[in-house]
Length: 242
Image (cartoon, rainbow, N blue to C red; front, side, top):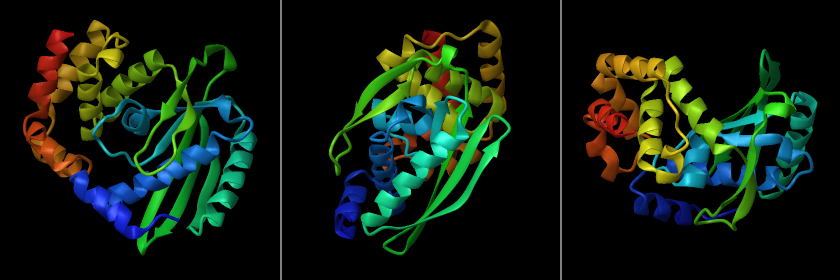
C-alpha cells in the first residue's frame, strides 16, 4: 500500500484535502483491478469520475458509475474478485451493501485508509447490448501505473450528464456541464434540444449560490473557487457560445 506522506504531499500540490486524494487513490486502485477482469468490457465507465480521470476535470468525484449489460451476477463476481485483490494490498475494505436495483445494481465499499473512513459507491445502470456505445481509454494517474478502462461512448456520456443536471439539479452537475463546454473534445459531442436548454437556464436562475459554494468548495482545488462564486452566470455564458 502507498505511504500516507505521498498522498498528503499530492493533496498539497493539488490544493485539496487528504480525503479527496485518498478516495481518488482508492478509485484508481479499484478501476485498475476491475478492468483486468474477464467480462469487465460489459460495464462502461461514465459520470463525474470518468470526466475527471479520463478527461481531466478538476472536480474530485465521489462515486463510480457504469452502464452495463443486464447481468448483476456478472458484476458481483468481478466485484468479489477485486475485493480479494484489494485486501492483498494491505487495505482494510468491506463490502457493506450489494443489491440489485430497479434498473441496475448498487454496491458500497467501506475503506479504512490511514484512519480515514472512506466510502465509495458503485452503481450500474443496465442497458440492452444493442445500444451500448463503447470506447477504450487510458487512465494515467500520478501515483499509479497507467491502466485501460472501457468507457461509455462520449456522445452518450455527455448527454447523460446534461440530463443529470436537469433531473437532479446538483451543484456538481452544474460544474460538470461547465467542464464539458470548456473541453473541446466533449463540447462537440453535446447536442442539447431547445427544451433542455430552457430547462437548464431556468434552474440556473433559481439555484442558490450558497448551496453551490458549500458543495463545490469541498470538491474543487482552491484555484477554482473564484469560478464557483458566479457559476450559474459563467455556465449561461458558455451555453450561449455553444
